[in-house]
Image (cartoon, rainbow, N blue to C red; front, top):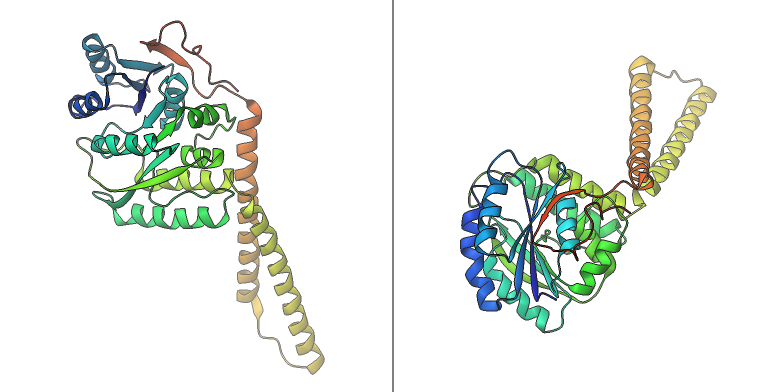
Length: 321
């Protein structure tokens, strides 16, 4: 079994790959020569695949998973974890925002007996205030209502022991919310604070605002049923409010007073109730949509090419559930 596996999801990263390998190779060599770097590649229109294969010719410890189509970063990460063979597995980005310099400290904590080592961001250089705000609020909401606790300001960058990886890849969820899945399986963990630098080159491949919201929604809807309970509570609250309005109306009627509410009041009330109903339907839709995804049981990923894994590797569509 390999001592250390580095899983790196990539898509259109030709500008970052050479620098990433230049920086990480000496660090991994100092930690021991028994390692592998697995690039999980969504088919890219640039030279990302060509660069990886060229580097693999120089160093067979560099391996490639190429998918039949673009499955997205979460599924690419899970695929790399499933194909990894290391006693310890580190998931990280190729843009050097996840500093390779932390690898040695993470391995030291793993050797101390921690199964999960989480680098925790103190600063997020280069990220707009809106994304930072959404992330901060998202972690607070998720940790308040979710079934699991996810440390704030942690991403997918983490070290996991072999037993953690084996348990995570056995989970049948198709959303790929790695932070929640790792928290769900448990085991002993620790945090390593660090200051996150800006990207080395290029731009992020997902929308900074909507991408963060999508991740947050997965944390809320996939690890908590609180939103359904909240919808019920809103229903009772509005029903109580309507009874209060009815009591006020009857009181005015018995007193013979004139009720001057008119059309604006009716429009506001109807719009308010309609909005609340749509919110409730939307919450139901989020859960039903996820149930539909799980029931279809489609493969999480389909591998088109697996370079460097040999005959012992999982089958090409082993992401099926």
